Amino acid sequence: MLDPNKTLIALFNYGGGMRGLVPAHIMSRIEEATGLRMAEMVDIFSGPSTGAILNAALTRRHPEHTSRPLYKARHLVKFYEREGLKIFPPDSFRDFRGILHDFNNRTLKLSQMNWLLRHGHYDPANLGKALKALYGDSLLEESLSSLIIPTYNIDGEQLEVAEEKDETGDTPARTVNNFCDEGGHAVWLKHIKNDYPPGAAQRTPRVSLYDAVMASCAAPTYFPCHHFEATYPDQRGRMSYSAIDGVIFDNPCISYLGAIRRHIPKDYNLVMIILGTGYTNRSIKKEDWNRYGSLGVVDPVNDLPLINIFFHASESALLEGFEEEMGDNLFIFNKSMIPTLGHPDAASPQIDDASPDNLKKLQFFAEEIMEENNSKLDAVCHLLSHRRDRRSETSQRTLKSKMRRYYYLFTGERKNEKRHKSDS
Image (cartoon, rainbow, N blue to C red; front, side):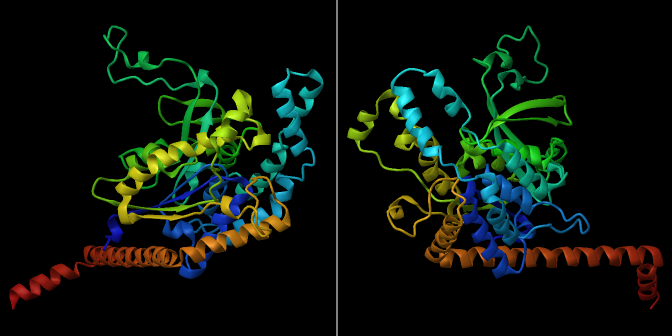
């Protein structure tokens, strides 16, 4: 049995645009079953892109009742249903652009096609307006639970140079020389509430939820990069970032190794709950791969085979070791979307399909995941609610003990009791 006072719960939500409806539906079911909100049960929220949208909203404080979260998971279901077509309006030229891109790659840069290809982004103002309404002026440092939002800074001039303490220009092997280039780098925007290692809670950058999530959602070919500033309380001070989609780290193994594990005390247990948006990695026959050629492997007409491999390769390499390390403390809710794609009721794997018909199919997909993992979902709900109840009981006993000590301190009643016993 896990000690509720020495157990931390981490939730990882995958990225995937409109497919964020899938974890939103699963979390709504968990909240309904437990009678509690996710921020009341989960200690650490992490995940990129649409996962960051969910996590930041679920940990946002209520402006009037600051100890409670403002949103329930069902509010996020409504968010996708309400804002989806505004963020991703129907694009009749999307497939046509893919054909042009394919043709363009196989010839030369044709200037008359450049406008179509260059202006393929969705308008970020629509996403920005939706996120402004969702978060207001809330800051990362105000989240109710620990919150980790990943993004990738493409501007090498803002590279953070590592230096060892007391290092000087005369040090034989300087840490600063370990950098081979000035390329981009991962940026973990973190607010760590449990303050481990000591001081972690005081190292939260001052950045709005709006900027952090916009940066994590800036998916290449969908949205332009998002430029923002964050102010750190240490020697870094104000940093400027030109950030693209955090879905580059759409991998719970990477979030665990790169941002979560270091904040878990050595004598604590970590339970991780992973909510997916559907796997979309396809099998490729060698004949098809060779036929694609050097440029065809990145063509949208061919479903971007090389890019899909890049996204899934690191997870396939790390997942087995990750599962071994976590053991029974790992709960994964996800499934492949590929085997059902030929079915008329199958949800679209396209992250920008916000049609009402696809939203219903995504709901059915979420329900399939829950039905196929029913006993596991029951175990998670029991774990979350039982741990919350046990911790509440402990905090109530602690509060009563403190109140009793204060009472005796101010009334002297305990001293009188001891004196009376010694006299008798």
